[in-house]
Image (cartoon, rainbow, N blue to C red):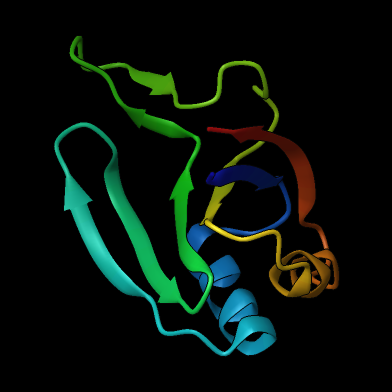
Length: 107
């Protein structure tokens, strides 16, 4: 089973959040670009992977759409996918100022 956690912040830019998470989790992010998601940052860790991206993503009509429309006030999202119930990443992410856990889904 895999857990998919969503975190968000309205106080940091994506680049600022990359820096903060790097220092809290000791991971290295690679910047990626997607036609669907725009620019995002990806890091792999021992428990899964982490993606940081703006909530506003490029829309087909030239207007930005929200990746997580249920959280319109959130500017930047952190998406964490883990295959174990290891609490370490969650504990360390809880220490990042301005980062809020928005929800979890498991498949």
